[in-house]
Image (cartoon, rainbow, N blue to C red; front, side, top):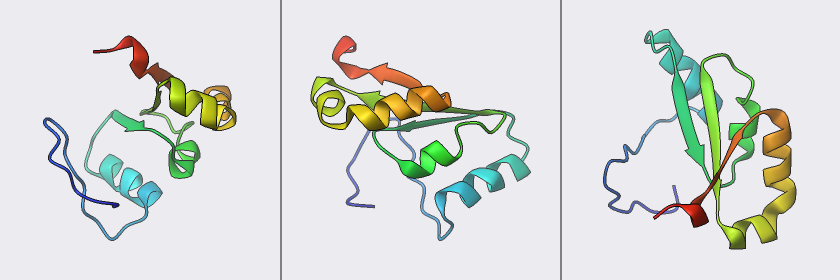
Length: 88
């Protein structure tokens, strides 16, 4: 929403629905599993415990230092944490 970059292998979703409603609509289309990747999103926290949804919060050392409370909450609620410092 802040801007559209040209990122390879990433589908940009354009919808008038709020995030949670969009996710529920995907299940209506017979998807059995949805993987959500985010940096920081309160909306993603709302869907962490939905069966068939895997929420992944990505971070690096800068983000973890600045927003550790959010990442710790995400992990506590059941989201996966993906450390980008360990990926190339």
